[in-house]
Length: 358
Image 1 (tube, rainbow, N blue to C red):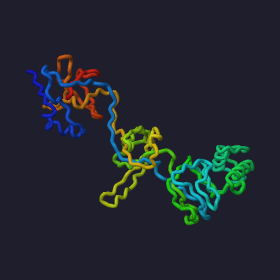
Image 2: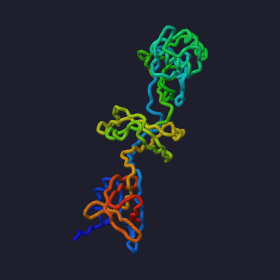
Image 3: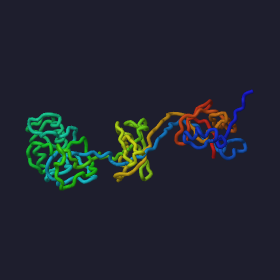
């Protein structure tokens, strides 16, 4: 004789299956309420082919990224003007002024370390010439040689800036960063005298990028969840969500001082870029939540979690409905996500109708 399979509604089988369900963080999933007189379930759902995504929600801060100090290259002089916090400074614009003369931003990666004048060659020369050309100055060849033609263009530039026309660019006259910046904080005040830092390393301002981003202090145990390009979703303070992508992951864990040595912890800084920066609106800084993809299953068969019925002998089944006939079919479960569960079993295919609670 074929042994009879015993079906136990999940409400009764909670003791049997609670451990498995609780481990997955899901609720009950069997027919609840009274079945229809003819034995049909009170409601049905359809097995569908879909993608399932499990996410982990972590807190973050929406802003403009981690501020970076911008050191002054001058060892003397009085600060007479500083760009205001929140101001965006582009190429050719002043970041601050010393003794009334502007210190101008140019794009590049080679920090100023020597005067640029006729006869000098090198990548810092080409960097300056590229900036001059981008600002509309002509009459010279953009290369790594500082010629008298370069000096003529520099004099024209200096005239437009309202400074002495020397044809030479001193270390203290420019700051170099890869792109436009947004002033985060004035670390010195107008009226302060430069010269307190050896080698001119005092910071006049801190700056960030100009595009809103979210910074997450991630537990190192969750580092496997992120890499540049990892998709994410940001829950904004107004309750709306916006798509995002992990743009940078720090390779170094940083200690977080909580004030209590027993609860101090370490985090990894993760930068998340918004797909639509305008979604941040006028927010300058705000706490947000970020959903990171923990696991994903593509093109799998799934049913509502409530369609599962626990079997007394272990495992699960779904009640397959075919017209006026029903049959409990054992299934293997896979990923649980968003109220759905991945299932597979004999006769389970896209379009199969299964019973669910009301």
